[in-house]
Image (cartoon, rainbow, N blue to C red; front, top):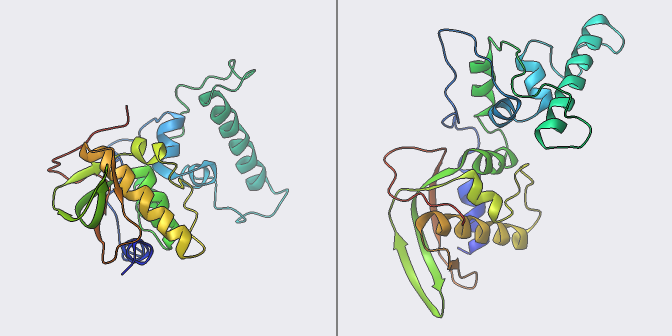
Length: 227
């Protein structure tokens, strides 16, 4: 099995499986979240609007009162989004708390945490991080390449995935070369979390094995971030 096929097999094994939510929402009372928290929790403005009770995309006919309310809410979210990223000219928008009381956030989060496609899995890996329990295969450290099997619980955070340019929106590789690139990125991000940032996958050697859980699952043995 090549690096490409091992990575693809590991990703596709999570399709349809409920993953651990990133942030368990409170069950006893409605909460007020910051824009950034909601975006990380639910994924984007459209999902936030749906969870907040403004309907699904395309649910309401254009021009109806329900459609206009949804569009107005989405425009407000865009302002929060711009301000959260420091876009000039938006400082007057109050951004720290946005205020919709998301009564059905648990259901929305559960739906989002169940990947339906390989793209969903890739997106969740980047956004929620992964707890890797086993990496086995030919790994290179400096000039030393050997067949290693590392069974430790390593949490690879979102920061680590961003550092290695992981496709955070969940773009699915189109061919074996792109799956191989994804496999190298996965190992590189994991190696940072493991405390050995120079460790790399050797794409020319066969039979790698990747076993991971999406999200952080205790106990964790290693959890380092990029410097």
